[in-house]
Length: 277
Image (cartoon, rainbow, N blue to C red; front, side, top):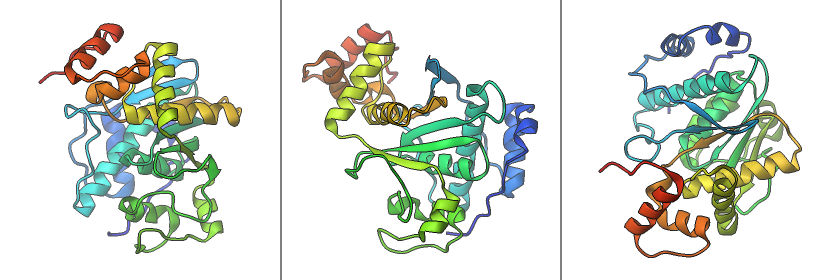
C-alpha cells in the first residue's frame, strides 16, 4: 500500500468549525493531498444521555459500507470517515478543544478512522475498541498491533513503518506509545453483548444491532472503570433489525424462531420504521 502522510489538524479546528460540512471536507482532502470523491450524505449525531452520544453509520444495505480495494480510493474513503468524525466531534462538544471519547468495533473501518483522527490532532482523548475476538480486558495497546491484518497498511502512517507482513506484527513500545497514547481494547463475550443490548433498550428505549451491543457494553465498562466523565461517542455500525433474533432474545429474555415475527414485534416495541425491501 502506498504511504500516506497524515497532517496535523491541531490548531486548525476552530477554522474548520466555522465551515459548512462540504467546505470542511474539501479543506481536509486538500491538507492530505488526495482527490476528493463524492461526499457521502452527512450523518446526524444523536444523544442518549448527558455525555453519551451516538452516530449511526449504516446505509441502505443496513451495514457500514466496506472500504474500496484500490489503494487511493481506500485512503480517500477512510479520509471521508475522518471527516465524519470531525463533524461528529463538533456536534458533541460544547467548545472546540474539549475532549471526546470514541468507541467502535475493531472490525469496522471507523476503528482505523478514529485512530487517524486522534493522530491528526482531533481532541479524541481515548479511542476504545470493542473487540469480540480477543479475550482480554481493557488495556493500553503498547507494543502490539491491535487490529487484524486487514488494517495493517492503514495503520502504517501512524507508526512511521513500512508495510508489515504476517498476521501479527510487533511495534517498538515507545513508537506505539508515542503514536497512540490513548487507544484501549475492551472484550465483550456473548453474555456481555446480550447485556449491552438489553441495557440500552431498558435504559434508553433504543435498539442496537448485535455487534453494537458489544460497543455499548465496552463503552459503559470504560466509563465506569476509568471514572472518565469525558463525553463518549458510540459509532453504531449496523441497523438494529439486521439480526432481529439475537436482539429480540436480549430485549425480551426469551428466544424466538421466526425472523419476520421477531422484526415485527421489535418494531412494535420500539417504534422503529419497517426495513424497506
